[in-house]
Image 1 (cartoon, chains in turn orange, blue):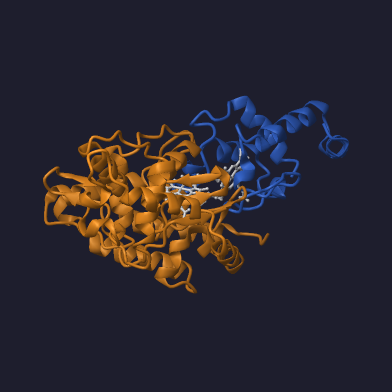
Image 2 (cartoon, each protein chain N blue to C red):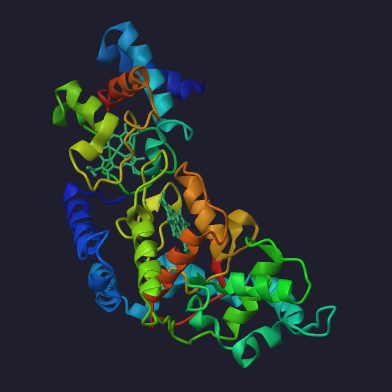
Length: 287
Length: 112
């Protein structure tokens, strides 16, 4: 291992401070500037990893160095998420008991639309994620909702991501103060320290991307949701965005929220928005 | 305990001196490596530990760098006091380790 001085740590911390407080944490809604945030966010990562283009970040830990990138290429030869993708494809067109199917719940029959989720629903006044929309579709058609974290939900989102591969994230923030507030709350959640170990999401995914925490290489926050859902060897199975959020919260000895709690919906909105323009790469495979 | 480790500790003892400090250092090493306790290896390379992470600096020559043990107690208790942006958890403030445990960990650090 190369020895590391305190200097890079300190400069990362400084950059983080700039990033986190470029707008005051609890700013009045009219000073929140998501477009400027997203630009600064991208610049932070492309400055830190000058060899990578923004679209290179979508492979999580595998984007962090050449050895890891090779591992990723090898994995993609026999993708471990294949079984889930197949299952998702079959489930997606299969009619519910009432004769309708998922296709009836989504624009463009659900094909090639992953990049538009989550969106801000102005009727509800809240963020709606893809996972939430899928369960709402089931319930509206008299079917029981799926668990948010794996199996069926992962299969469905895997298929929807696959049909959207290469399409750039296109998250919109409508001119509605509640949308801006949801974005801002998601951002605050991301930078707030919590849990017995006193970590924020940013501690790991902004301050330390590419570093190893024990044997795991930390993914950069830029493009961190583009590959969802993912197959992880460590889980011996698939996991959704909900699974990843709750797992990361448990790792810091914090109390994970319910999947699709308002905080997580806002968090997903923020993280997806700042990755606008980066291509959907899901489903992904991870160590 | 593995013979090699016992041997390493015995050699450590000869250098470190008093027997009680020695056993406290051994206890401190256990706490530092235990995933449910200090789990310092998550972030630091430490001699004798497996699968270290790379987030923090390697912990070595600690006694030369921090001759005053109070400085080490302060770092382990709450490094955010010295560096508000640090990723290192505040082991004392958040009661991940007790005062006594921190003292043992510091004894161990001083053998590095």
